[in-house]
Image (cartoon, rainbow, N blue to C red; front, side, top):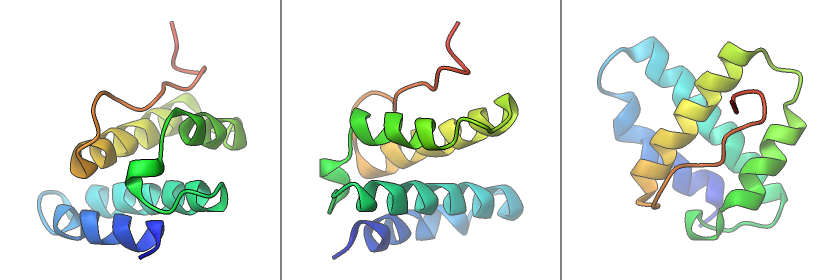
Length: 96
């Protein structure tokens, strides 16, 4: 099973509840992150870590702060759905 398929499976029920438009956008962001992590060699969510998140932020440096925050929230939800401990790394744009 590929990482993208795993994320799609994890987020399927998430997108069906609550505000549909926002949840679809968040799911799209999670799948976009999964595609990025898969290009770096991750095969499952258990292999995804800080290195993948930092690489994702480096690739998306030109995003506005509000967009970065929305992507980070989507990654936090993905972490929760995958049962990973803690939170994904913060991008430099959000650090205090």
